[in-house]
Length: 398
Image 1 (cartoon, rainbow, N blue to C red):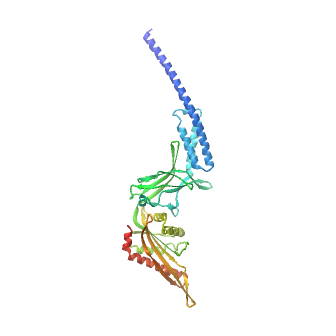
Image 2: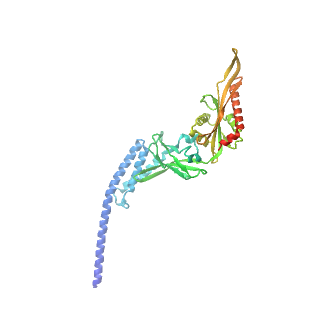
Image 3: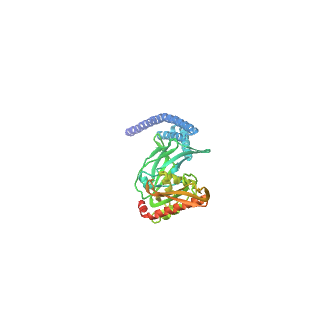
């Protein structure tokens, strides 16, 4: 027998015993501590799941989202590699799986809708990138709603993230919807104004350090470069009337367009045929000085990625016709007075030019004939005034 070999064998056996003992101690320590953590984590996950269910039952979807995101965060906080040794691992995995599925289901019922100033004829419009760079014009603004089988409801306290999806600039990164579900952002700077810009709003919920971005709950706000062009809007109506605009396309629009034909500005004549009442409401709001209405009116004329920089507005108001009475005798002759105003505004709502008010009287054998005669006189005066002062007006289109 070789003593050296015997000693070697003994040392190897002793080392094996020590290694096995160390491994057993390690397994015991690793399995014992995480088991407690796993148990506490499971309890927290159950509580969060119950809270999420209660939030949904009481129509608080954002609160439910927060609880579910927190549940997933708790699951991820478990020490790595211990789930297999946890007797409740299956329940944890099932809770996490259902939470993930519920997040997707709730997200599918949420919608970001543009605010009214971003709509024209039911379609979302584009903003002016030059105005955006100045901190004027349309700012990103939306309303978050949740859709139910019976209808929809606004969603308050929802965290919405704003960021440039196309273009470079600075925007307030995060906002929370108010009690009406409305959320908005402020753009502080834009790197370039000669290229389109897209700002995206998206729902993003953060809890316990975990963020869930609901990429299906988003809304894009597009801003287009402005060109040296003008949209021409006109309204012929009774003085103080709130009735519908007369005709699909007012002849006054054509008179203004002819008068501006030498101004060197591309013109986009407006048409009221699709919805005369909406057209009149939009015109009066813009004529009254609403910057949002001006921006919406210009955006409605965007074409080929181009946005007009100016809005030309002509308003003709006529008075109720009067029947002529002379020396106590009534005649079948009617008269009506009319007044005309014209204003040119920039995309930010500021006034670029304003023409002196015009007045005219029309006469005819019927009330309608008197009105049309008065309006025809206003159209002719408007066209003449614009033509005679085309140089001054052209300079206002800076």
